[in-house]
Amino acid sequence: MAYQTILVHVDDNPSVFGRIGVAIALARQGGHLVGVAPTGVARALHPSLPPGQSDPTLALHLGFLREQAQAALATFTARCAAAGLTSYEGRVIDDDAAGGLCLHGRVADVIVLSQSDPDQGGPGLLADLPADVVLHAGTPVLIAPFSGERASVGQRVLVSWDASREAAIALRLALPLLRHAGSVDLAVFDTGPGSHTVAEAQAADPRAWLARHGVRASFAIHPLANKRQHVGEALLALVAQKNADLLVMGAYGHSRVRETILGGFTRTLFESMSVPVLMAH
Image (cartoon, rainbow, N blue to C red):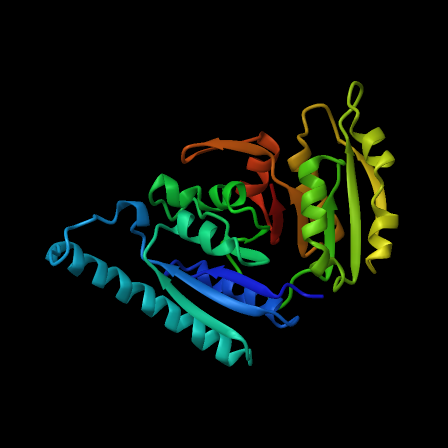
């Protein structure tokens, strides 16, 4: 069974074309596609005025932001129509991007975002949008690289497996994609003496469980090239070696208020990803 509800972030950033392409590829498997265009004004900041009163400056500003969001949605709907999709909709929401996508994404099966482009600059919260949504939404997030478009996603899937809670959640929530994949490779990284990762990953080998869900997968242990190599770097190298077009992994980190704190492994993938990455926390 495919993802039944796919939510994609819609804005006027150049990376929107890549993420819409990924979302359309998922919707072609049989799901309903929802394009969400936030105005950027947090719902918690909307003033509560007495009945009969209004703020004309705020109304003018909100009107401008809604027009921008509607224009972005027009591009989204045109792409969906051109792709021949029959089940899609667009929504303009009065909210900031992170809060709005998390809220609406809680009734979706997957959220599609773009990797932050370091050359685009912008406010800190916007730059950390993927990490914020991954940690707060409670829904798997498929992050598309900020450059390039893809006609398909998930034909050759690489799964980072260490038997952790986060990896298990990501693997379970990736099942709709794994069932459509041509190949699925489970990769375990041996970080050397003192690490229990390999033993735990072998004890919780998911291949039999995946097979009962109709997914055939390979399982391999990969030693790091040297003591200085990080798991994130090794994983990216393996993605290139396997010519994978999708990476599945758990997201490690926590947050307090709106400050996002991620482990080095996850941060490496956010910054250097070369293929779409499905993350769950």
